[in-house]
Image (cartoon, rainbow, N blue to C red; front, side, top):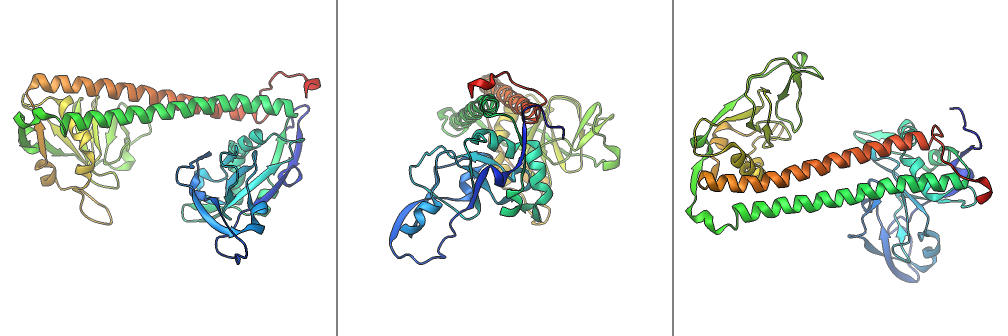
Length: 388
């Protein structure tokens, strides 16, 4: 990599102190002291979850060595491959807090490198690539050791530029965080709608109750070989997952049809297909040929009952849901006018949720693009060196 003008090249051990944490119960407690204890479970995707932080009894002599200081960067030693080496800056949320031995604490030299900038380097594409290249792997899990971390390669600009870059990326993180919280609120509202429409609705006493098979035709799809599927095509092929198995130029099921996954880890997943599609051998399509129930209402009813549908699965190796069990699943429904009113509310809530999730995907994509450009010096930010 060509080093940009005024940037420096170093290894991590030359710009930061690296520590491992406290191993629980391995040392005698001479003078007991009970303090909060940060575990790997608290470090999630580059953020901290302090809601379930636990306390541990330790010797007072260990407190100074294993205490977190504001500005420390926390890195988990191992975990899922795509989450390995995530960096989180400790902001001193708890005045005195210890950390687990499976968490690395990186304490940067503040005169050389800015902590937030360093944390972004760890989670950047280059950082993840380095961690994966030296990680010990066990099935889907991976881990790194302190020696590998000490040799982490760094290329960084002057402090002033580091600070500006970190501020830019932090603004994107804040937008992502706010959007994720908004999604949670919208999902909570969707669940509230489900409860008040289908569980606590006093009008339900006068509704109709029928087995699903009496309202629609439950049809199992036809299997397509993987060799017949493409990454792109005119029609999606739904075959048991929560995303299409691929695409094809032929279809066997009309648009605006509800499907339920028949087999695999996602069996019971309820989907609404707005375009023509291929219904695969591990998928049921619901063909509505009468005027007792609207497609939209039925979809929202089944979607809010998805957990119950998934509980119908049988088999251990490759679980599946039997057609008879789907056909016997009970449906509660009012008259068509009331169905339309209920569907309208759900449709508004769902469209809002889809839109906000699309915005979140854009924010995340934009942040990744900025990291790729800013953390490598491909894009430079304006600053005056004499202001450092």
